[in-house]
Length: 177
Image 1 (cartoon, rainbow, N blue to C red):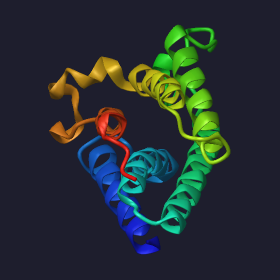
Image 2: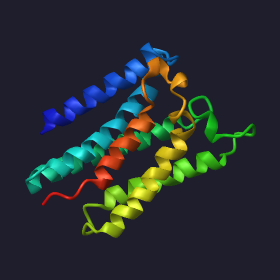
Image 3: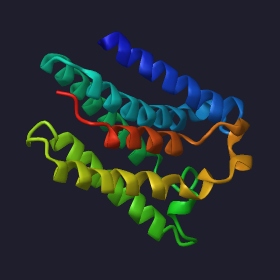
Image 4: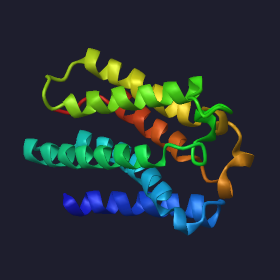
């Protein structure tokens, strides 16, 4: 299982590196930005993998990895939370914009809910509440670029869009027992 998680991360990091550095304008020295994008995509792929897991120990191991990935994503996001990386999040006075507030609130609440997921029984109410906040986070982060393929670096879809599509697959997939 650890090899599958490593493979997911490798694929996610490779995509992020190609999209942002090779096809895009992000210099390699900003590797933490690229790493953070890879972490977010890895989280969504791992959530899908957890659906396919049959055994409880396997699900727990994947969930533990998701917890590590979320924690690393939060730490890196806080380090990178500046107008240089997220200009839509800040106004001219460097106060948070509505988009910045929505993205951060959605991210914080969805992370807390995901991390609480092992402590409370699964319910559809939980799934829908989590869905609202992770969607809010992803949509606020990238909505404006999703429908402009000409603005995509190398015509590669944004990671927020890919993450949202993976989330939709997870959300609408029937829970396997």
